[in-house]
Length: 107
Image 1 (tube, rainbow, N blue to C red):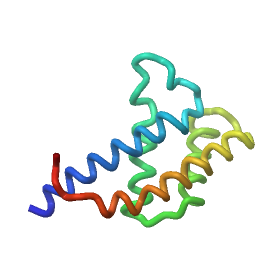
Image 2 (tube, one colour; image 1 turned 45 degrees about the vertical axis):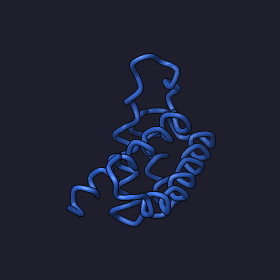
Image 3 (tube, one colour; image 1 turned 90 degrees about the vertical axis):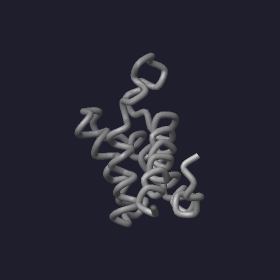
């Protein structure tokens, strides 16, 4: 049954990461747009995997976020995007201990 409970934990943790990205990363400025709530989900999931499965550091996750925003999203490089990536990556890494210590109960 451990596999099933890990699935629930992972879902809860990923939801928390998506919320963090939605509230605080928002490099293209859509978090006020109705219907855009899932805009950053794939990037949040990617950062979650980097943190939890690959053991990446805040610096490595920040580089990923900076690349996504500056190149993939076409925003161009800027100090603001770099600072935003660093802040969100640092907050994400700070959440890791809470991800690992949560109860295994699905509800």
